[in-house]
Length: 67
Image (cartoon, rainbow, N blue to C red; front, side, top):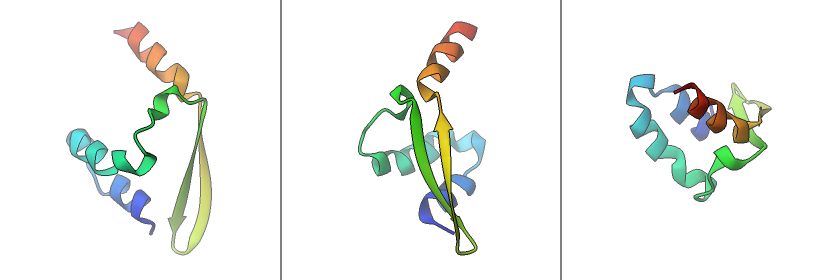
């Protein structure tokens, strides 16, 4: 299992701040929530996949509108 995926999958949602701080340096300080697309490589059992997170730039706006 890849290091990125392993770190994300082994953290509980109640420990979000610790999970975030452990992976934030991996994307070079870029605010990924300003990007329209983010590509995330995932490896599990020697099988590679590529996940595409879409419209992250809209997520912040919608969350802000809700609360």
